[in-house]
Length: 445
Ligand code: 9MR
Image 1 (cartoon, protein in one colour):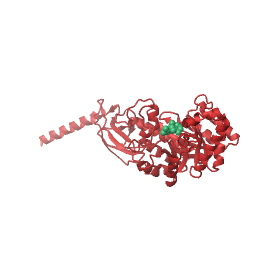
Image 2 (cartoon, helix red, strand yellow; image 1 turned 180 degrees about the vertical axis):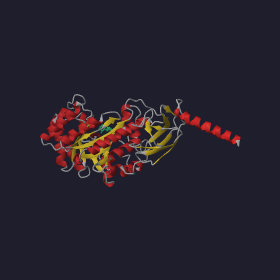
Image 3 (cartoon, protein in one colour; image 1 turned 90 degrees about the horizontal axis):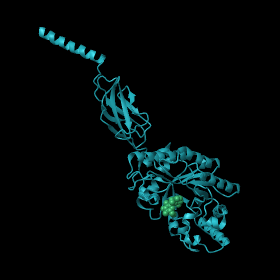
């Protein structure tokens, strides 16, 4: 009996010591929580969970897209939680997230739990063209890339196509008096057969002028007659099939905003632009007529010069329906507010706006040799931004949002800049990139 009393006494002393221990100045012992797999995973959220530990008054959670926690999801760096779970929301779809938790008691922090990885789900399986409810989603074609996976993706995801280079003057009119319609006809037939909208690109572009026109030997009057014949012949041939034309492409210089000193300008003066629009309209009274150019979104004087030129056309009753912003941009340029401001100027003029050649350089400074997950997410964010900005303009001003290339290794940018980049929605195996999902999310906003 005495022995039992002694044991009870010892237990009592031990309990009192433990109880006092938590109240005295010595730091409590805090084990790291056991983090559990996330539950309730959606495309934009999940619930992080963990097992509580003795002595914890609360917990802190870190959430990151980097498994080394080199950065944190906004608002989720050491976020304090009193429960043993937390809903993490406003996330990107189809993206890997990492979280870790520690226990807190006053100033004392436990070690971090092990890191849990979770991936938000793929957005609803909506094709791009269905996500974009009031305008076309376009991509480019080349006549030798209209079968197999190219064709399958075009038909599934896109509602519009543009010829990447085979409906330009050097291809359709290579020799004086001798048109060659082989490739343009194939593309037009493809659009008609597959029920795709066809944007014609481009009747006049200084960079695709055949040599015989660059070195034209006739008089200026003969040059003008030749050009009228060309514009009317092409537009008439594809009347009813080509729904819109870039009538003139890149007529204004960067920087100065002067008219580009092309052979057209030299032969006919600035008036060549108005004349080409009028000829195109005479050939097809329904086709939409666009002026198309690049670098119009960074708030520079090129936009002002282009708008002045367009205002001159409108004042002179020249038939023009819209403006194409090419949108060859980078993941970090230009700013959203500059793009919105430029778009608004087109809306203010009651013109249609075509984002006509969208590609986004992920590697403009050539600082990467492969697409890092961090840069891939930055690219995704920019694609989402562009889709949001376009979706937000009034329906009457929308026409199409056209991506300039199907998959990364087909982009003109690689040759042009001479180094690797990943500017498109699909990787070289036709797999949808983070950028694809960002673009889709932006369209569905
Ligand atoms: O991407 C196009 C490339 O395949 C052609 O070789 C090139 C010349 O025809 O044109 C490229 O597209 C250009 C577009 O027609 C106008 N804006 C700039 C584009 C990139 O150079």
